Amino acid sequence: MKTRLLIISLIAGLYGVAEAQTAEDLNEGLSITHDPAAYPTLPYELAWWTRPSFYYFVLQTSDLTQPWVYHDFAVKGQAGAGGLGEIEGFRFDSSTDKLFYRIEFTDDPNHPTLLADFDGDHLRNIDELDDSSLFDLFEPEIFVDLNGNGFADYWETYWQTRLGLSELISWDDADGDGFTVAMEYELSLGLDRDDSVDSESPSKDDAQAGEVVLMIPGVGAKRVSEQPDSSNLL
Image 1 (cartoon, rainbow, N blue to C red):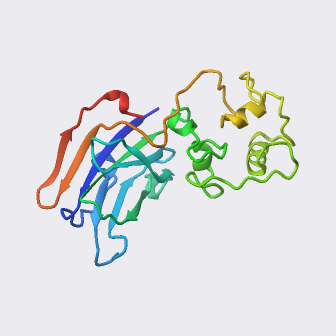
Image 2: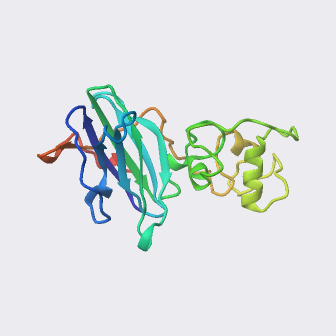
Image 3: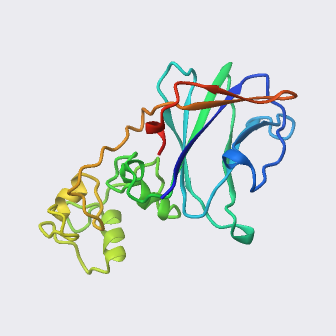
């Protein structure tokens, strides 16, 4: 299982249009481009190459002395041409004089970031990213409970379909880990893994920093060691 961390910073007024990414680029080709002529309302773009079946999260901070927070963008890498991953990212605007971004990515389905529930709708992040056409990782689903059993219908339907069950019984232990279905629902756990081993889920509002990459047109990339710590890697 591979896990990695990359950081890039945006200093307002310094950025031009970066060279196009290639699959052979270091650091997943992570870059910020600035094109106000083509995109006047969202002139900046953060983008990188993804790897198939890897999960990517974006974090940001306005100052490296401030906590890192998860940005409302996450994605699961999909296979593109020749089996390579596709380019992912998003456009944005910024009125601040500096802004730092980083991406975290992993292919470990048991990593705490993937087992967390950022939007509090009882579905784990990995479940929402695996079925992104149905769910939004950063927008909780609307609670509807037509049969009155205490489970949100979307959650109940998701796990019934995934496990091939006709119904979920609240006192059953679907995966044999000592947690009943009702307990797993309340704790936003999964019905497909042993949750008896504690895992510390990250807060959506906090993370730790590592290496910083400062891109300056005409000069290139400058790496600044900002208290690197291997324990910060996913």
